[in-house]
Length: 596
Image (cartoon, rainbow, N blue to C red; front, side, top):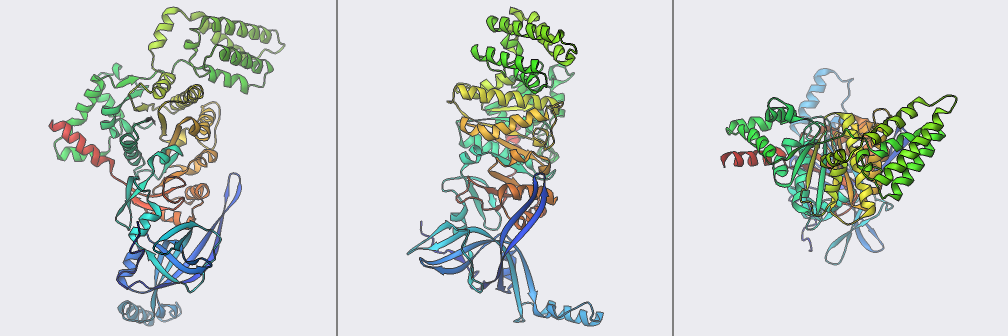
């Protein structure tokens, strides 16, 4: 499509030129040492006009013209800030008497649009893209080496040109672009495929946005399943309509033991106050209770069993031991499981259902236990682990194995996710205890990747990790499973894509995350981040200029900066958007269900 109006001159009012260009470096200390971020900064000067100033206060792209051997090109900059300048202000100083300063200020105030010596300084960052003039159209090219010419005529990109610059043709809307009155259209499959993140301060709407994106995926990617790890109880109500239609809630909370399981369930979920107040205005607050009753009646709230340990956790303990006996036993157990085609992430009870494997495991453990006891200084911790497994083997019976098959554990959920025939597409795992949540994540991810290594065919799977600082903190230890969960999530982000298993993380504590994990993410939604060190982590991961990221400190609730290496038409172009409000969707759904 040929764009008839590539530039916006605001009815002839916008006239600007490139005044200065420089390379700006900002350095900061990171865990791995000093990190230096480099940006190409452009300073433009535009004629002063109040309409122009109002327009520039919103997000805009400005293009500086120059010519090369192939013809005219425009270097595209993203505007970061504007500053109106009055010539008389330059000659004013604090040394002037107060009455003189006031006279100056009064004259300045009254002459902004009358005086000739006024202008607007426009601060911007080079995007790394040029727009080349063709015979009848324009095309975009990546070019980070071209040198701008100071004094160059400069123009604002039109809305139509910005759409072509950023939007994916036929893409899915993830919000409205601020300043352009157009939706941001992305390649939703690539948004999922190459991992994503939602970062923002407490209360900016991370769970709200994540719920909206979950809906978009379920509606537009029918071959995709989603497992949401929910520590704070955000999604039991936040995705009520989707749970009713597509999935179920799996939880370690025993609501059946409560005096009133409906009331207990609703009390455990983080129902937004604004949603409750909106339902109250329409006399629909009982819709929440009706929803809870319906999911329990339909068997969509299911107990999640994490009590049975898995062999991979035991193997991990053995392999991390400094005892040669432990490492040797771990190798023997892995060989036994591999020869029996048993996944190491299977619960011990399931493994022991295989009599041949059970007998070989029992023999290997007995031999190791005997070696340990014959040592001059027996390793008590290792012996206690071996004793536990031995008792577990002795306690295993046919009846217990049958009972084990009925338990819903992370491994069973992994199998449900990987099963094409299973129609449940949304699995919300509400596990409020952080240690148990990490254990669940470790077992689910390990089992999923093991299953996919054996059979690659099946649905695409997205793992949503809310409160990601609990799973991938930068400081991890073995005792609380943060080390093991770090390993599992990092493995998911590094290897998952080739097995069609993908990750989505959400947190308010960006600077406390495992940097290696963050660097695997290729699409970012960044909300209000008042702390500079949080913004630095994102700047390092994305290569985005800190000058642009600094604008996120002033975003309002529901406003986001989106940047992606894969999901937009051209990579790594920051866009400011207003996301759809998940509560509006829920309000309509609850109200309609209540009326019916």
